[in-house]
Image (spheres, rainbow, N blue to C red):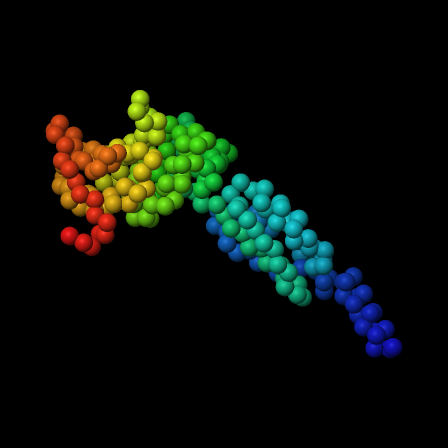
Length: 234
């Protein structure tokens, strides 16, 4: 009985004393949001009692952030809380006056996140707005090999009378690509093998709408280019 009595007293002291307060807060998975911002939004401080941490409430707060896909909160006794976040990827950017707005992997445009300089390794989208076309464009970009994605400088939505999904790409190596969203990722995956067959000094338009054709800027004739399934095969 004495052991039980003193155990209860110790528990009461523990719950009422700073010993039950959070001492360590770990944040993992974050790159866009810094640790301090995540902790501030969670509402956890070093004065918070470890037993009063409401995991689902904190996860709900973090989910409201525009660049957070999901989060999880775990308690590690005696006094540590771990917050793990899964952030949405920035797939591309859209021009807005003199700024660039990030386009997330879910197709949302972050209108309040203005970037002044041209982002590195992310294409600029022109003529797109939130909706089915942009969602399709983002979905196609996500399936591209990283090498190909990083080689794209700018993508313009250029619909015409026969194809509302037509797009025009301007590549970092100086070539222009005419394509349709309906087969974009499938055909664009072969871009490295296509340009390897071309003279790097002679720029022009690579047409990927039907087959693969190259037209130099100074010529009117088109040259057919073979698409290679595997980069290493001749």
